[in-house]
Length: 378
Ligand SMILES: *Cc1c(COP(=O)(O)O)cnc(C)c1O
Image (tube, rainbow, N blue to C red; front, side, top):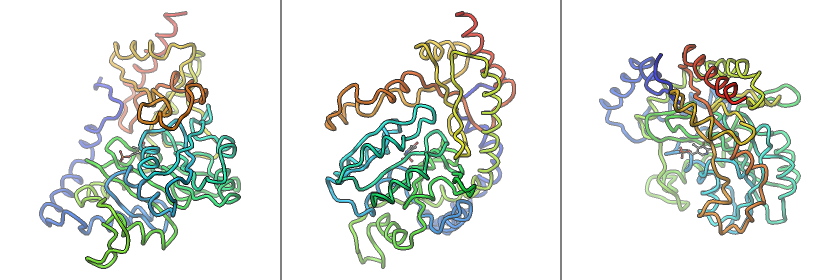
């Protein structure tokens, strides 16, 4: 059996090697390392895939979030509502720009920001909502957009973990995660569903004006060369990464399908294990399983994790601590027990190995190890 990994980037590279190597060497030969032709071509290809008017590439997913907030028209002190159960990048950019963070609870089943919690958190100072499509499943965007319209709020979707996921509206129509709000952001960090071989990110928008402004701000606030309309930053996707992403984009749908098969297998194999809950699949989202995250009951999560490690099965806790308890975010002034749902998720969640190149003997070993663990204890 091949060694089991959370994400097997080597297996993927071996499969795509000829195309990737050729893409990289063609950039080397062109020496157009910044803003080379592959960058524009990748943006156009991703636009088509996403069904969105504009894709603006940038240096990473965190910058994408920062750029989105920079063009949102928000002023220091304006309130931004987001979930307490996410990767730190989602909240750090809000704090960095001097905006006021309002953390809210996730839904305990989908792990995504609770639309009800958003409604309760809105104050006259609220100006934006940042829903995160966590683990590859969409947040309840129809409900979130309705609330946003009622209160005139700007919506930035953090779609870093959901590249290619479909949101299904109640009338049956579909849009890709990240293309529903005013701006969507994503990351091409190597382990993401569409990952490059370094750092990379992008923004999505259907708004021409926002797109032009994002392009300018991501490039020092420059519209015409050496003329600066806005205070910008330097955040560009380099050409080698764009060339790699062009190759990988062609396989994204297929790779997401392969992940879904792995998830189906896990679901079925683990269905009888009463001590854990397999991931909930919301009716309004096609889940692309960036992570396959189970909930372990009865306080046995860490014990299970250790046992799995001893039999060669890696697993990860995303995320071990709520953000309001992190040293850097104590200034927000929340109390320890303000987020019981987040707290209990942080104690229960465990993400199992998940990538498109998992083999059947690996899956059998993982699921039988989990079943063994619980049978031994009972
Ligand atoms: C990965 C990730 C980011 C940040 O992306 P980087 O490219 O690493 O900066 C932001 N939000 C979420 C939810 C992520 O998973």
